[in-house]
Length: 234
Ligand SMILES: Nc1ncnc2c1ncn2[C@@H]1O[C@H](COP(=O)(O)OP(=O)(O)OP(=O)(O)O)[C@@H](O)[C@H]1O
Ligand SMILES: [Mg+2]
Image 1 (cartoon, rainbow, N blue to C red):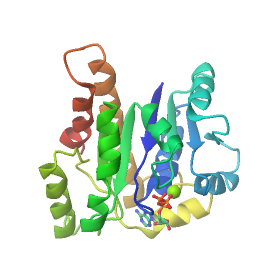
Image 2: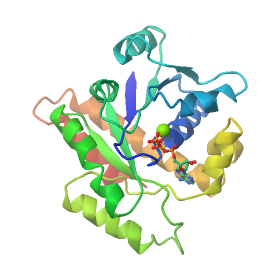
Image 3: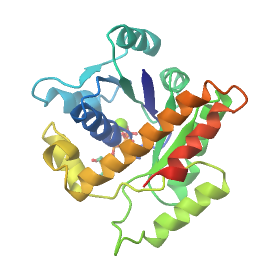
């Protein structure tokens, strides 16, 4: 079972949006998914309440993250997504400790990129693989990313922070699909929004495979695997 924790100290970076979009996408691929809504704001619970059928399942961690994960394991879950609050509270620390991979959404731009540092530090201290996913980016023109996105990527790379080589653009579809209790890949798998989420999920899956393989090669630090998301993503 893999645990993907979406964390960032910065409010509004896209943690809840990407958790819902990715979890619903993985669900459409027949993965057995559990979402843990670890943010008292309850954004994910709000979305989930609008979904017909109640899948993927969602729980809130009243009795702690570890317990929720233990149950998920017993139930035969393939992948757990944890949405966290924009804090460094104990529950966020627990969610990072439980992670197979920490995904740090960040909007391109100076303030947003500076704010990833705290989450990066926590992940590094716990030897957890992590990678930044640039979110709400200006849409590419002629398949070329905007200068702001390129600069942001260069800034992260200079700080040796793994960054997914793709981008999630600023698109109304990411909001409107969630408001309808759905997701981009369910409503429009062939839309640009649907393709972007599928691209991020593929990169995450490659990363998870590398992380799990690295566990059998003790001389390779687990954190190296996080870079795979940056290196090989489409
Ligand atoms: N790629 C995107 N395109 C369009 N709107 C987006 C995108 N990502 C996020 N948003 C919007 O930005 C706002 C903040 O996003 P979201 O709630 O996912 O961030 P968050 O990191 O979970 O915030 P918080 O820290 O408050 O929990 C929301 O209104 C969301 O709809
Ligand atoms: Mg949120």
